[in-house]
Every structure is written in structure tokens, then in C-alpha cells.
Length: 292
Image (cartoon, rainbow, N blue to C red; front, side, top):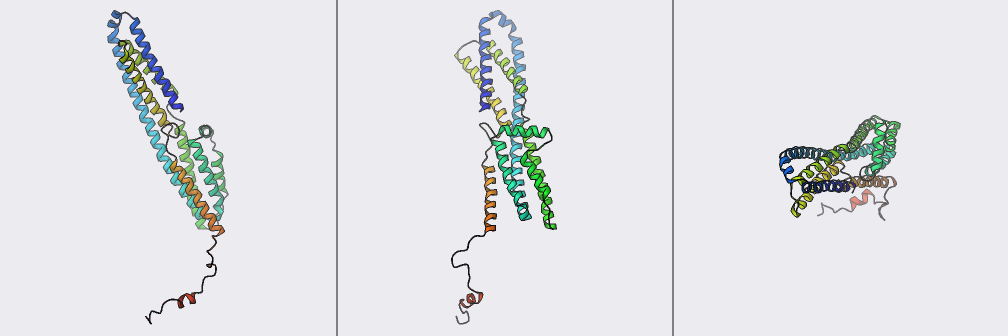
């Protein structure tokens, strides 16, 4: 909801600027307004062009960021599935690695959708050439593995490549989320919108319709700022990226873990199936095709 509050501040400041323009129009002499109308209109046209260009550029940039985040998230999910398959194929020695992978996926879900402070902590760690604890644990596990044959060596090499891709993709995503539209740039946009609406109020007579149109214009500018802020962080706010797909990934990993546990403990056979009849009795019980 913090993005909505910021957009509301933009709308309020813009509308107040229009009201200030109405007040200046009422206070200034009419002859003075007629003489300066051409200059005021030229400046307002310049500011309107700058504001529209910058808002369009920011909306396009934030949309590209949201789209790239979605593509990177899909790539990350595919890599996690591949890594779990490689660890399963490696054998029993990679059991702890699969547990670390599931724990890492839970951390990642919390880091992206819920814990913004953790995300900032990861970004600070990246700037200091460090990694989060869950990533360190996975790297240390793969370093400790000792394959026993060529097949395990092949699976381990593939798994290490996938782990590197997973970590690199996550770091890229977090850097992008913390490199949003600069606050100073948004302040400049707010200043331009205030100047623009002050000029509109300065050139307009005060009545109910002009006040209503000024409020509508302020809401439009605030909605553009809201779109920029929302798409710059697609994991929070009103237009957040759905997490059902990532939750489905967690369920798949948990289901694979349960199936592996059942395979190790063994599922008890139905009553009467522990001692199946010998093969000779099965053959003798078949119908005699010759006699038929």
C-alpha cells in the first residue's frame, strides 16, 4: 500500500498547485494576465511535453522490468526442477542437497514476496561480494560431494552449472528490484506536474467545472506514477505478480520428497500379496486352448 500513499501525495500536491493557480488568477490584475498569457502558454507547453515524455519513458522502463522479472522467474523455476532431477539421479549422497534446495526455495519465496528487508539485506551483501546463508550452504554442499563413478561425476558437473545459473539469476533479479526509478527523478516529475497545473489554474477562471477537471487531471498524473511504482516492484503492491506458480513448484518438490521417502521405507503390500503363488500354479490355472 505504500505505492498508493505515494501516488496520493502526488495527486494532492498537483491539485493544490492548481488551486494555487486559481487563487493567483483571481488575485492578479486582468491586464497583467492578458499581457503575459502568451509567455505562460509557451512555458506550459514546454513543461507538458517534458512531463509526458518522462512519464512515458518511466512507464515503459518499469513495464520492461516487470516483464523481465517474470521471464527470469520462469527460468529460475525450470532450473530448480532440473537441479532437483540431477540430485535425484546422483543418488543417496545428494539427499542433503535436495533438502537444502527445498529450504532455499522457501527462502526465495519469502525474499521476493514478503520480506522486503531481507531483499535489501541480500542487496547489501551482494554489494560487499557476499551471498546469503542459504546460497552459501548449497555451494558448500556441492564442494563437499565426492562422486564415486563417471555417471555421478557427470550429474555433479551438470548440477553445479545449474546452481551457478540459479544464483546468478537470483542476484540479477534482486539487483533489478533495488535499481528502480530514482526518488529524485520522481520528485522532478512531481515538480513539473505542480508547475503545469499551477499554470493551468493561472490561465483559467474559477468555477466548479475547472476545479473538477483539475482534480481529474491530478488523479491521472498520480495514476501514472502509481503504474511506475507498481511495475518497478512486481512482487508487492496492488498489481503484484501471482505466486501460485511458485507455490506449485514448492508442492512439486515436497511431493517428490514424499515419494522418495515412501520408496525408501517401502509401501506395505496388500494382505495376501506378501506370498504370491508360484509361477507353475499360474500357468496351470490358465485355460487349455487346445481342448477349447
